[in-house]
Length: 131
Image (cartoon, rainbow, N blue to C red; front, side, top):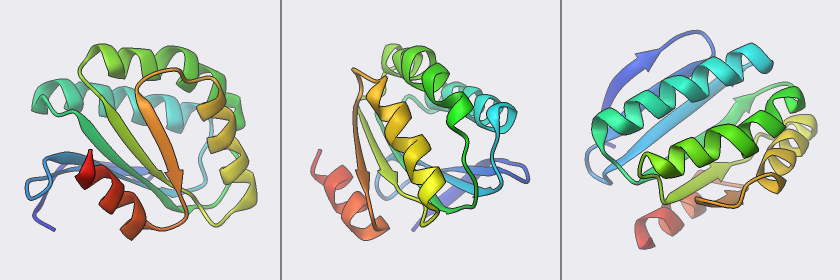
């Protein structure tokens, strides 16, 4: 991966993948409303800046539930992302069951962009490349 890191804090690293022309968001550790909210807004700004249409969202290292941010993410943030040009969002599930439930809840509030969740990063990447 030819990644250029554009943002990094203890909860999230956002990089641009030049080979695939998408944002790669790598979430880490315990998440809560504030970390998800702040990270999502950071991703929105970078998406606008890079003018890209795809995101590979990696939750493999997320260790907690963050469902209090799910409705905001689905009803507010995803529409803003779509408005900014996002078309395809590949979401790699966390192995943590509560994080997975939070992901499913957020996706249930989402109409666009097209968001699909995957159990592994290779399948998610392959789908995103085809879009």
